[in-house]
Length: 138
Image 1 (cartoon, rainbow, N blue to C red):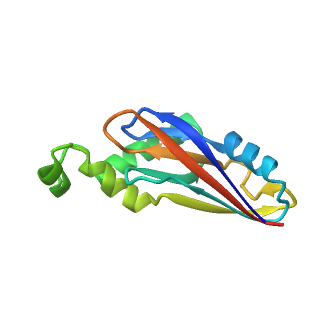
Image 2 (tube, helix red, strand yellow):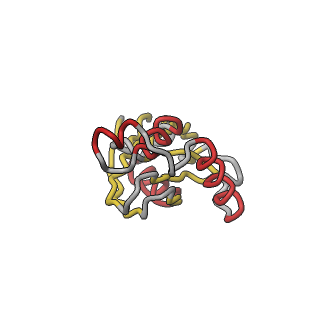
């Protein structure tokens, strides 16, 4: 059995980290699937889906680490071609990846005690996003 639903999401850009765990759990519950896999995917090239401990210190540390790895203040080739100033967001998203797959066992996502599912918006402006949740199993 397969079940797919889209979660609409408003984001602020600039490494906005949004906890979507509860919304993903709601989709899983509506799916009726007990055992299988849940894939959370964001179409587009300036966002990423991952797991993290959603705690203020960790969020700040992650934002700081991402800024050190892919600084927003540099000029990127993408910016030279398109002039939109978000080259850094495309590089960040490519490194972090747009999707996450989580095993579903007995109706529960196999997340660790402190793990939440987050969407990270790297773009240089606020956006409306659509997060796809695809549940496969029985």
